[in-house]
Image (tube, rainbow, N blue to C red; front, top):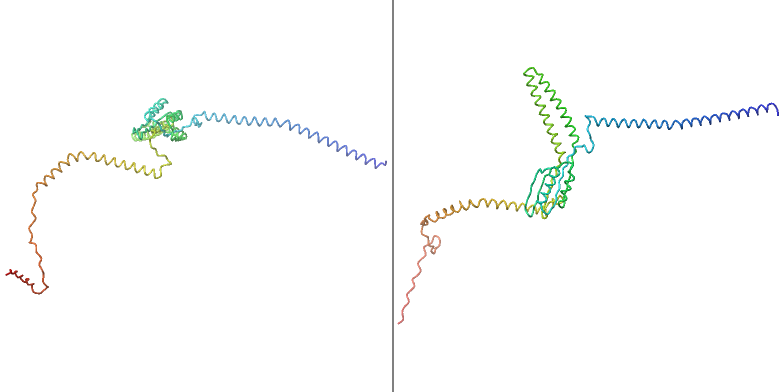
Length: 333
């Protein structure tokens, strides 16, 4: 082999060796990087998780601090101010007994009766009660009233007044501070004009404060005591449902009721007037009748003699002559 061939072979072997060395170095570098990445991943993930957990815990602590502060409002469901109002109709066999039972249950629950209207007519017996019960006993009481008979209608309405209550509390606190500041200024007044002006201002601010406190007491009463209006009707009582408010039968029933009411009013008026008519009208009628009997009868006035019509002649001619005499009949020989 010539010298040039050997040189070329050596250069080729050197190039192959250099490429192999570079390849081995690249593989080792990649493995080191992969190892470092795999080791750093869990550490970074755990750090991020710890940071997120710390943030959540901090937010929870802030929420707790805000809830525990004096100026924050507790808006949980069990702490909200809600007004409950219920209306129901129950058909029972004995209206009076059902009404007594309802009143007894309401008083046992800590409530009282706000209104009581009853009609004891056998055909249309009914009793309408307005009951005030504690808000936490509202559902139990209304279910108990429904169990006294056959429930025909129930309607429950709620009104959330939490925001209004919170607003009233803030306004009351502000108004109290204004009253206190006005009283302090009044205590330091030195002239008559300042004294009169500050007294008027204190009176006005105290009146506004009293009005706000009255609204707060009204809301507190409505939220603390719920209102239930229950109507007990007899087994044969006629009730008008919402679906039957229009129609021929409803109109006929209404007209008949109006006719009976008008007839009742007319008979009542007649019964009230009849004693006066008997006591006063009968004697007056008798006096008038006697006066007419005693009055003399007057003869009819005399007038001209009646004209007897005779046979009339022709107009403008001579008067008619008398008829010839009739000869007397002769007697026989």
